[in-house]
Image (cartoon, one colour):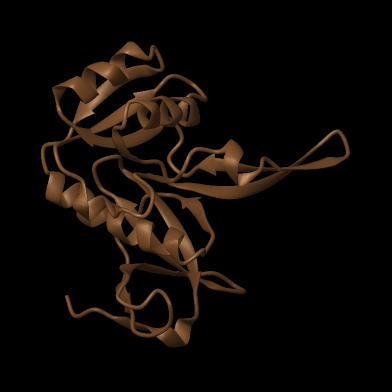
Length: 183
């Protein structure tokens, strides 16, 4: 597995929250497998970004390979001025930039993901859901998180969705720590 120092930070500047980022929000749709490389280049240019990643393991030639993989393959979220946008484009790692029409909505969708990552809980990609029972975590380290609850045979997962991308991720929760939201 790559050492932590071999991967870019999930949030830059480190220790900051995406709620504190200033400037215009952009979603960079990267060229294939260029998310981390773009993050390193944004870091060098002192551009605030969010690249949610989670550890993954897979077997290859009788070996287990562990690595940090982006949760939303092909996307990195960054915030800055026009110069930051141009710097991202100059890297030749961006296939396209998606302007964010509702920055408050994007931040609202990303903050729960940030909270889960800060708590060290593993996230995994999940299909985007168009319907389901919305719930809130009422106790524990993930208290306050809201999402759609999915019950599987051996566990319960809380699905966190990024509406702008039409993608989602999920975290395992104790069913006793969630309550349904009134709709």
